[in-house]
Length: 346
Image 1 (cartoon, rainbow, N blue to C red):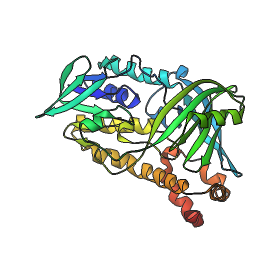
Image 2 (cartoon, helix red, strand yellow):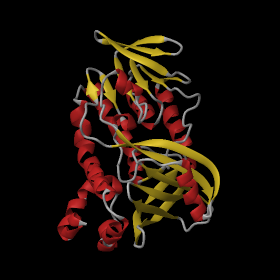
Image 3 (cartoon, rainbow, N blue to C red):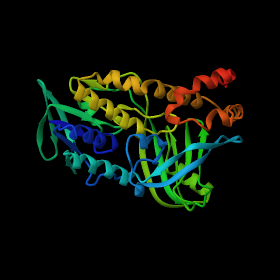
């Protein structure tokens, strides 16, 4: 049996891939309902549709304009392939249903409190039962307990992400505010509502409240989550034990986004299990260069003062950025630096 700990997008997508190949799969989800609590902004590049055909009701909005905002400078961008704003709860539930329909078993309200190796098997202990498993996959988010139980990927750093769904008249443009040690955002759901949030080392609810007051927005509900910062060091695989998605820290440090990366890691894990390929080699080939560049840019921005961030924005051209996908940043960042090498010293 294959046990997947965590019923988020990476866990459910992996369960679907394995179950449709006739593998016996069980998902252990600690919450009573898939998709809640919400811990994500839910804006994605259109690359998602290359992997999954989404029902229309999951897509809440399409975004074709974005603004990158410093203290005084602002860069307006046209997004050639509209970004999707999705209903995260429905998205997670959609993937869970695909997994179940393919033959996977879903155990809700089943918090795993221990994973132990015994010879070539694992013992999965929940608050209700103990089950034997041949393969274990940790898909249990940034604070993955599976990684601790199995001594995988210990080098973890985080940002604290706080978000509110608000009433806010807007121009249907994503606004991304570059700040020291983190960032803020506004993501429209429609022309009257938006998700606004902050992500910093030590973000507090009062900081988010200050931001919503500045925007003159009325808060409907709060969300919170931990954003793992990518670190290439550390094992995500050892002897039939895997980490995928946020549990493996496979998140873009510049934006905090990681849904597409989590799906890619699930595909790599599936290929490793079904085709007997090395998972570490697979995910590093697919994701390492891009995620490393995102982390390098984040580290550089983190050290910048607001005036230097303004200078950086003043040196970027719209043509450099507007037609590019942030999920493929590694394909254009070097061309950008060759064209404008002084950005290296900003």
